[in-house]
Each structure stands twice: as C-alpha cells, then as structure tokens.
Length: 304
Image 1 (cartoon, one colour):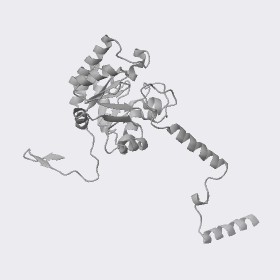
Image 2 (cartoon, rainbow, N blue to C red):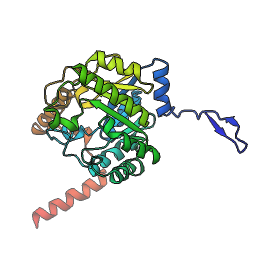
Image 3 (cartoon, rainbow, N blue to C red):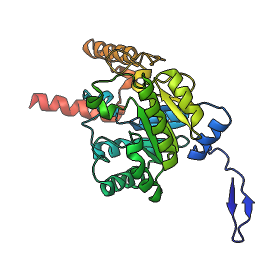
Image 4 (spheres, rainbow, N blue to C red):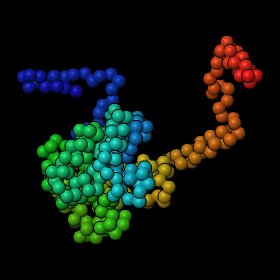
C-alpha cells in the first residue's frame, strides 16, 4: 500500500495486520494480466455473502437472479430497484474482501439516462456496491460513459442476457452464427471502449468466448461460456442445489443444501412431535428457592 504525500511522492504504508486485501477493479485486471482466474459468485443475504467472502471469492454479484431463486418469480424481470437495494445492503454488511457488484434490474436503466444514473448512484451510495452490472452491448455505450462521469464502475453483460428473455424467445445460447458472433465481438469492444471494468459472457459457445477474451484488455467472466474466459461466475443456489428446477448444462453442483436443509427440518419436526426437543439441557430452570415458592403458590391457588 502507498499514499501520496503533499509533495506528490509515494510514501509506503504497511498493510494492517489481519485485514484482508480488498479486491478492486485493478485487482481483477491484474489477475487477467497474470493469467490468474477470477472466481465470482452471486449472493443475496448477509449469511451466504459472509461465507462466500470467507471462501476467498473475488467478486460477489448481487444478481437480479434473486427474483427467481429468492423471490420465486419465473424470470428476473419483476424485481425492483428497492428490492435489489435491500439485498445489496445485506451483502455489503457481510463482505470484507470481495468486490461487491449490484445488478441493475430491468427497467432501471432502459428509458431515461438521467434516471439510470440516479438509480446507479443509489446502488453505490445507499447499497454500498462498488460497481453496477448492466446488460447490453453497443446500445449501452452512452449510459456507461455517463456512469463513468459519475465515478461508477460498470460491469458489462452480453450474450444470453436474461432481461431480454422475451426478445430472444427464451433462454437460448447466443452467438451461433457468424453474424451473431461478429455482433458479440463488436459489442464487447464497444463496452471496453466505453469504459467497463469487466464483461460477463453468458450462454455463448466456448470458441466465441475465447475469441472475445483474447480481443479485450479488460477481464471476461463466463457463465455458460466455457473455460477460456478470465473468470467464472455461477448463481449460488445452482451451486448448492437450491433452485428446485433442472440444472443448466454449464452448472456444476458442489453441494446439496436442499438435502441438508430438508433432513434437518424433518428431524426437527420429528423431535418436536415426540417431545424429545427441547430436553433438560436445552431448558432454563428456576433456582431451588424460587421453585419452592412457585410450587407453594401453585398449591395454594388450587386449594382456593
């Protein structure tokens, strides 16, 4: 670490013991330059965000996917800015090391540029996000430039963009024809020129993601885009089997929280029904003196 003194020279400052090195946009860029993969995950609440952060994940996305995996909607479209802010605040309170990125939900940046910037500022100022993510390619250039003017880092997102599900006719792999491939490459380059700090590549062929990653100087983070991107991201609930739906081809399940939770809940119900929970060790007791007074009072009341 270093600070600049009043004469403009860099002065070395030792890192504080016990405090993890904070991940920043420069950290992500350094990983790309050094060929070190970026690990990213979504999180939506304090408890899971804390665990994700403690696991050493570089980037935590408070994704609009919470509409589906937390709120039970069929798509990401219904979630609102206020709902996203609520979850972003919870995640921010848990995180010490990872970079926290907030998804800007559908409708929060699609019409008026001034309103889009105002919404993004809320995610930084109120939510504590260190960057926002927006979907789209060249059509988002002006917005990204405006956000840069407002000192807000932006993560781009192209390929399968869930907020465009109706236009795409469903959640389909993108970039399968040469025309579509060329459009994705142009979009990626346009986003980089506009000033994004990274680009999420979702649901595109491995070869296309590899080409885009080679073209860009900023990091790419893949989801369903093969192993050649600069990093990977998955939805936390997919990772631990909490989505209650079929897994996408690109999802690898690393745990079965559904089975763990279900088993714990069923065991609890059985113990309650058989009166084996709580037991003596899980109960509070009166002192002998107070218990004797209570018993005397109870007997007197019954005789009255």
